[in-house]
Picture 1: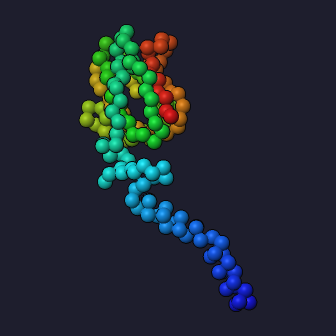
Picture 2: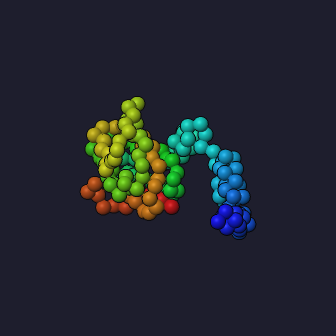
Picture 3: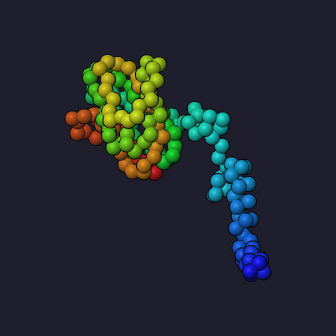
Length: 163
């Protein structure tokens, strides 16, 4: 019985020597911060949500008779973004987009130097002039919109394409 176990162990070691070698290589790559495709990633000391890793998007505008966004936004799933929403106070306006807010993870919303960390969002409304900054991580690929409720014009929405 002992002889059979020894022969089986040797046979397995000879048949699958690459597994141990592959594990060692994968471990070394992970320690070096090298991704499978060979690209090096380093999220820094604070990780993915560090300011250095955040991409600032062109601001959205809430103003009577003006377009909300200049162009569509192209985002990458897993990317960390920040967008400012500016209202001129000319009219009480909101941006609504439950589908968009379910496709991203909202890190924080900053209004007048007050930082909010919501569990979820559906819309944001401005009664007066001001700016809200929303930081988020894009998650679910697809095409999403934030639009002024009750409007049907193409210029009254912002389109986000998450790839």
